[in-house]
Image (cartoon, rainbow, N blue to C red; front, side, top):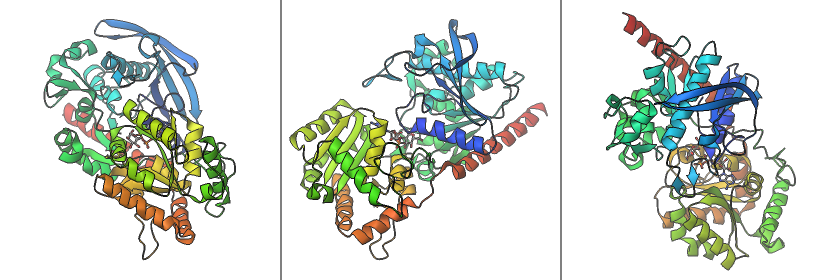
Length: 486
Ligand code: ADP
Ligand code: GLC
């Protein structure tokens, strides 16, 4: 697998969680997986297993490859090239991307393949994730077709987020060892630029995305970000597989970040988590404070996650009988907005701008409601963490959120959360209002909590689906090779 993030070595979002959980689950099924990620600043050095120069269009850089054992059959290889990766951020600083990102991630793909070609006796499939790994299928076809280990190996591309397309000016093409014939509509060209994601979509054997719902959505104009036609052309080869969650790391019965364990039959510990969250944000923990419903948000602060919708109804949110705790970073406007709300309403709003994993766990555990009003959501992990932690999700019915949250039905009392369809502030407020109302009825509320806590979102079932996809790729590649020989 090739990706730009993998926990615990580098993380800005859910991609990193997937690159930790999926390989482990595949390992449990008896497969051998190596995950390639850059060694960014701060990532621990592992065991150096190789060192060689990698060239892209005449620019040659020395790379060291550090191996970290991860689990049975699973390892990570950190591609260490300080000139490219030893920087303050993963992709850039603030909203500003690094100007050489095309080269940085082309290098990742190329160096990973060269490593595999030199160090492995056999490779069954190369699995590339998101645009950052999008050139791997192209390099395999164009540069390694005759390679004894890598020749003819099938590729899988997983789209974690179609909004990030890896777009660069056309003139970088020759600096990436790619010939001008690839600058065409059925290869890398996208409205006069080149797109790494398009490269991956067009050159991989099989495509996946991270929920069945999103697999459908990205073939529509509304969610396609200009890529819907490109994806539709490959719809026969596109499979939606829901992400799993790491049920050991996200287990309220054993989570070290929590003051006390809790579970579906033992909800008392959750109150202690709520108390600790309130305390850590300097909010009241007296009887009234503990009784007031607490809404949690842990997120990248970007439009995708619905922060513009939230802005449009912030005064209305403050009118509700509810407290809010937010952890996140991202768009400076949203950072400032929430920090200001916390300053002006310290009793009602807590905001921590930053990235803080233990606090993320504590909020997931201590909040009563988890709010995730995403405009689009390929899968989303936080709502699944919330379900497991008895924190009832209020979500927009899109992508993976729609696939994983079952809307509450007042008549039967069935359901695991509250969903709204229209992408508007009033729709958000209505769904939150319903949740706050049902919260007042502890019997109903606990039934919703328990229904969510009993769901199984572990990786194993999803990993089996990936194995099927890999097999499909292997069969496809074999058929292609036979046809080429004939
Ligand atoms: P996305 O990848 O689009 O950001 P996901 O829901 O798939 O959304 O995954 C987000 C992951 O990042 C979760 O594991 C979540 O807990 C984590 N996360 C997001 N923001 C923060 C933060 N500020 N501090 C700690 N963890 C965060
Ligand atoms: C992306 C998506 C998110 C998904 C994650 C992991 O960051 O935004 O919905 O859960 O990738 O697949």
